[in-house]
Image 1 (tube, helix red, strand yellow):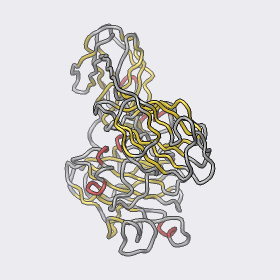
Image 2 (cartoon, helix red, strand yellow):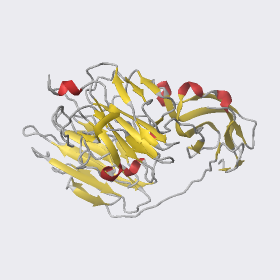
Image 3 (tube, one colour):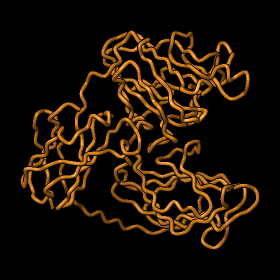
Image 4 (spheres, helix red, strand yellow):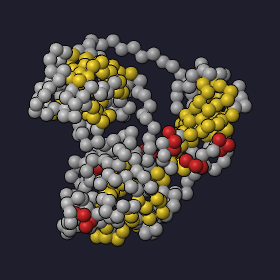
Length: 428
């Protein structure tokens, strides 16, 4: 076993340690036939409403949440069979306790979810099953267990925690992600103050104001008839995971004007932003002045006052789903919005086995893919000196311009107990 402890080097470093533990739980197994509501338990079987020997029923719409008995653990549900009417009946699975399906992962036919584990802070998983009024099938069988919470999948710029720092006045996105990232349902579309629908082709940006003033921007779609919606949240005293439950209090401004009802709503497609308009909240559609959370007047919201030291995130949604990209111009801002803080390595993923030849680490913010080079880092510790090579991010290799989680090949392998330090030695 390799034991790695903390040590500071060059003031920019990551510390990581390795340990193993055994958690044994003794509970009585139960059978749950998709009862709806919340189950608190770490054993048993989850079936559709037909149980182990019958089909589910028509016209079902049932949400069942499973939470661990120990709040420090996370639920895992392992499907051993799955068969629902293809393309008509769906089982949706959400991390946490959200019971909506707007951006959930849905399964139909015999496309089994397999093994699903929670990485939500609650440790819970929520299953929403919807069937139509005709054909029914055998449904599913799955086993419930609990254990150590695993690491969530790597965040991307489609997630709030992977938000892109605003480093320049003009940002161009030539293509967009097709989905909501690893963390869907990050805000509550049913909040009475929210003007947006559920997440769609999400991109997030973040900045901490370096000077008090107005935050202003204009978004120009690459396709001039595209409809982009957006919202700004104040995360000064909150984190990304707080947005869903506190959408109303954290929301600062949002605009969903536009749509596909030609020629009326389409008149509000195209350029949008906080560009000197009158209103802070505008729903979909066009020409309803004053607007509401359900109806929009135009695509230009008022400038957004921001305070030095406060942190804000900008969420952008491609409502029309073209994926064609856009250009963002922040030069309308009188506040300091350009990121002037260098990224740091904050964590190294664990566990690390004896003889490991790779380490995975995370920056404090998204960084430009092309700026990360093998020679930017050193790894010191017993058994060294070490060489790091082939440093890459799944986001970068997948076509993104930004990444936050990177993996490096280590030579020679890590085989000795002791203190190791991963340090940045050049600007990233």
